[in-house]
Amino acid sequence: MAHDASEVAHLKAGRSVARLLIGVVILLPLALGTASSDLEGSSPQIQDCPFPADPNLVVGKLLGWVRVELGQSLDHTRTWSDPDGDSVTIELLSAPEGVRLINKPRILSYTLLWRPRRVMTTAIVIRITDKPVRGKPMSDTGTLLVQVVPASKRAAPRLCGGSSR
Picture (tube, rainbow, N blue to C red):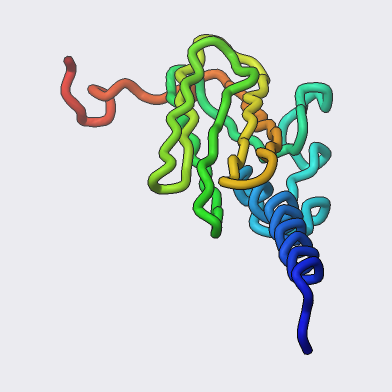
């Protein structure tokens, strides 16, 4: 079956639109750490959060939740997948003071680092933008809920056979 130039151009445009839609449906959810294109079924739900959290803290998609003890550090890494190899930027939109975002594009991941200074429930909001060579950039926003709890009481090292220093 022979196609004229306008039909070929139309077919190529259709493939480009399909690739763009696949990027929106699959790539960005993966960038935010979801493993399926069925976003409603695979994303964590606020009602399943093991600690009380205000739903108004969530911007965009709920990525999950973590608990960290006061005096301990949060070290939370997420990964993404981009079969096209487009560049991806990650931005920290909202977070408590001191949260650092380490982007690791070569290994397709980012890490959130933070040492909380007080007991609280808070949110870390990030935006991930996929920047294709052709077409418009696509972005998605997600929230990680964090509960900072009091440090658990532990015996002093010398009471456990440790040094008295």
